[in-house]
Image (cartoon, rainbow, N blue to C red):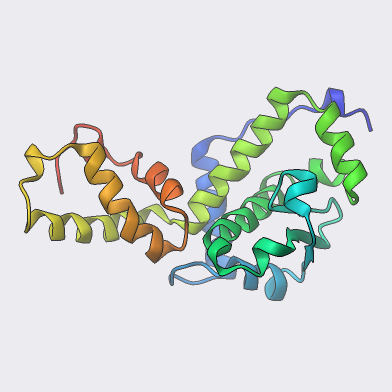
Length: 209
């Protein structure tokens, strides 16, 4: 396959969110954190295969094969609880490719490290970034349902309001402060939750709710 001619499809944020919500409704429930590993292994019947030094060799925590039969994950990180939230996002990212790019990705014929390297070397950088950005957005919508984030955010803000005057508190500091407990509740990194919270007007000169 001539990777130099690959074009990533345009998918709006609204459509990515809708697909993530539909996927979660089909394979999960309203509880958090979303157990993406169980969804992959039990419900989608995709094998999760730990590989030694995957991160070192491929600069990636997880990779999905083009035949959708396997998700490879770095063995050291997989066995280390400290990487649990990071890998949850990585798994959700790979499922983002499964949902958003299944038809085109199947044609890439990527089932070995050598084929992955060839793909990375040949595909135009801009197009590769489009694919990755879309999969990242899918993972964020899947693991942090915005309606539930809003509900939990409201609870956290009410807690903070009992202690300080929010109007005199820097909004970026407030976001960072609230991102910590919410990231633990949703099972994603604090940095990822910080990005999610940036969508809410309360941190963009909006009114507190």
